[in-house]
Length: 298
Image (tube, rainbow, N blue to C red; front, side, top):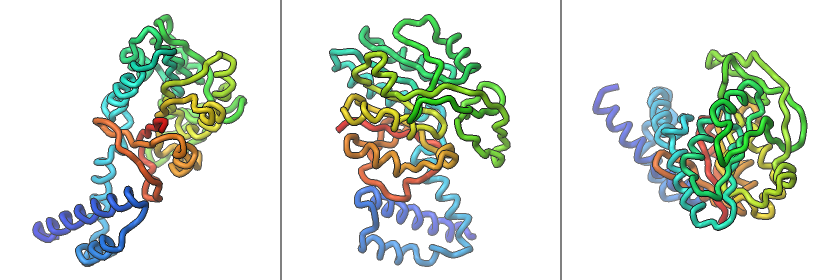
C-alpha cells in the first residue's frame, strides 16, 4: 500500500469508527444517516481481503485507546478511581467499609489504606490461596484498619479447586484456564474455601459496603450473585470489577453484569484519568481483553 493510499485509509477508518462508536454508545445501534454516510466514505475498503491487516491494526489501536489490555492498577486508572471513591466516602458519617475481594499479595489493599485514611474507614481483604495469603499477611498483617481473611466468595458456600501457574500467580482461578496461546500452564491446584458475601456481612454485622472491589479471575459474577440481599437492599454503594480473558473460561459476559446492575447502578468503564459512562448495552462491548468497570448507585 502506498503512503498516500494508506493515509486516506486510516483517516477514513478513524472517522467512521468514531461515528459508529458514538452512535452505538448513545443509541445502542446505528442511525440511518450515519450508516449511509459510512457506506459512502468507507465503501472502497470495508469487507475486502486486501484491507484486513489494516483493519486489524486499527482495531488494536482503538481497543488500547479505550484502556483495554492494561492490568496494572497503578497505571490503568484504578488509583484515580480510588480518589473519586474516597471523595464520596469523606461525606459519609457512618462506617466506611471497603472490600478487597481477590486481594492477592496486598498491593491493592495497601493502596486502599494509603488513600482512605479516615478514622471510620476499614478494609476487609479476602484471599483464598494459602501461599498467596501468607504473602498478604506478611505485607499487611498487623496494620491498623484492615482485617485479612483466608477465603473467597461465590454464589454458594463450598470448597473448590483453585488453579494457578507457578509462583504467586495473579492468574489463579477456580476455572482451569486454557492459556497455551500465552505459553502459560495452569499446572497447580489447591482446595479453597468460598462463602457467600451476604452470609459474611450478616455474621459480621456489616450493614453496608461503601466500595466493593472484585478481581477473582472470571468468578466476579458469582461473587455478586452471592451478594443478592446486599444488592437488593441497596447496601453496596459502589462496585469495581475486572473483566477480560478469564470471562471466556467462566463463560460470563458483560451483558450479565449490565443486566444485573443497571437498574440500581450507573455503569462506567475505568480509563486512565477517570471513568467513562456506559449508558446502554450493545454486543460490541463484549471485548475479552482486560479492563475494569465501575458501578455507582443511582
